[in-house]
Length: 213
Length: 248
View (cartoon, rainbow over the protein chains, first blue to last red):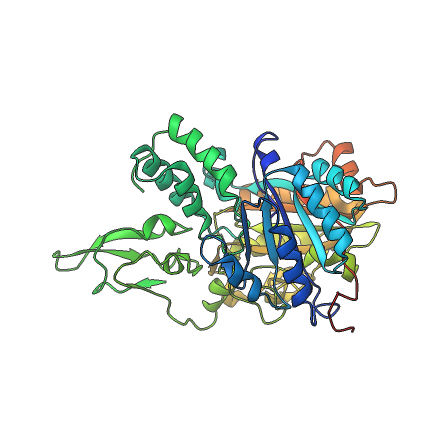
């Protein structure tokens, strides 16, 4: 639930961060839907996706993509992360033509997703906004860390691991890309965007100091 | 989660993976060995330290907990599926299948307070405070949400006292309200800030109007309330008959 909402970022870096995902409704159209969900994920993976996965199996950084496709079940929620809004529009157009009947949801800048829907000839059905964080805000890490950790809505990417990766990049243990892809592994659904994470980590490695966790 | 002290070599590789930062180095009672130890009161049993597969001595292990500790894992581990909803994680299908279920109709808004998110974790005692404040407004809590199932009184927001000390990575208070109550609910949530030892993220759902506008966006703009340019859109491709599926 809401595992792709609340991705924190700037309008600039969120323009490289869109998640298209799909599921069916329990008690309505779930029975026998695995084939349609597989077809959908295969369509999405024709594009240059930064990550993909199914919570039932894992993401592309921990499991071979073909295994993810083959293990899809009626109850799966399948995901693909896009870094280019034009490709989002093209993928939506293709999904419309495929007319699979499964629900399709897109996370990202709402206005851009609206434009992509129009380009694809789709009328949006329902929109969910993030209305921010409330409560005891002193418990939160820095915004820059949140921009990375909130890409896994289940909270599986720890702020401490992000700090460790920044330190490891500085020490030359990992490249920015390797660190970002390592951060993608705890997010089983495959909604973590390692392309965006790499940019954020490399920037932080330049301007931040970190201690051992 | 626990760590077998006899196996742990104290390398600390698991520590940064811990979502709650609750793995520390400690010295054995005799002072002759350093190893890692989990602060079990702070641990939410999300299991990521073990799933990460970084422990070379397989010292991490997840004990099978009984009630009420068992709820930590079912709310915090995204691979755990709630019996009631068959949805993994903390909540329901919410707007993701609204084009099929019609759960959120025109004139209504779905709102949610995702307690403990992002990355802070929340005690049920704090969650109950929010439930009680919202209950005074007479909101309708989502019956299929596993957190609602822990209420012993939906009218007052009182939770089962057995769970109040339990901590979860996050849990979602979901509700359905008429559009004209969105601001009132949001203000109740804003006023809770000083009473809580955690954070929460707020979600706001509505059907798109026939003129393609989003009514909740208009409400937020009119009342001067902040909302993100980022969000989630159900693009309306769902059908009761899925290609290759079994008709209901």
